[in-house]
Length: 142
Image (cartoon, rainbow, N blue to C red; front, side, top):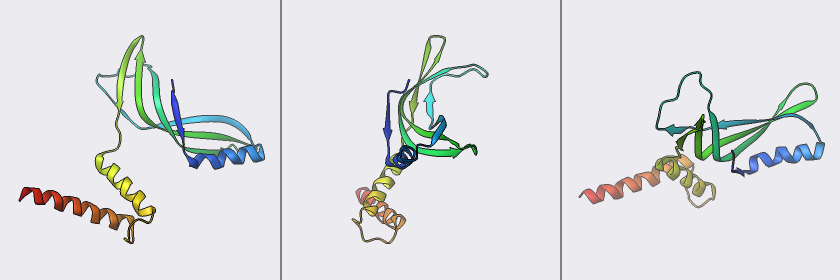
């Protein structure tokens, strides 16, 4: 059961295009990406119900059917709260988020794109900032 979805700007242009042209949508498909850690084994060739508490809508794409209709593909990324059910038994799964280094890189990239730094590239800025952090920790060893 999907409790909430966050819509990002990348899909709004496609939705607006459908509203303006009134294109016929044949199917609306959901593609889910991401992974979650579980504490117990699953059995091969067995069916499980999957419940997702939260997923971010990352992209909406249009796929032509070459017959005047299109399919809309909604790409979701797991955020939290995944459970598997097997005949009443609930298996909880933990969605792994970004690592601390991935979060740092993302924030530094946002700072670079906002024009708040004088570096020539986001990678150059990332290298400079992480070097500063490393040097600060090396000082603590002395």
